[in-house]
Amino acid sequence: MLAFAAAVAAGIYWYLGTHGTTANQSADRDVAVDAAEQIVVNINTVHPQTIDSDLAAAQSSLTDPMLTEYGKVRQQFADSLKKAQASVVATPAGASLTSFDDDKGTASALVAINVTASSANQQPTQKQQLFQVDMQRTPDGWKAAKAAPTAGQS
Image (tube, rainbow, N blue to C red; front, side, top):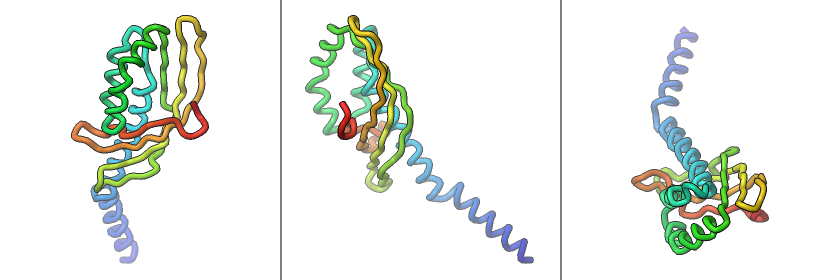
């Protein structure tokens, strides 16, 4: 009888863990951390041949106040990249949420990326960077309100 009660209790806990609020919040956190990685990749990847679509992808990853700031410098940034024939490719190395508020629709994450950069007159260089990303959930998904390398990085 005791074994039966333990099996029933385990079944109830399993069901609640996979179908209840906790499971939904866990899935929401997974979506947020995946979005943070994609945001950081989008804002750190550009190719000379696809510069306009790359910058559009970056812009589509943003919300205010970062979106407004990005809009102010996007054309100057694009012109500089075109002139230098710069290529920057970011790949995610890992990410973790540092905060998550499902009710407010906000989340923050640390995202590590590997970056390879080159230009017409520069050999490819590689480095790793760590970004702090503050996000807001929008009707179109998670967007960065703020994203920047952590202190001590360029």
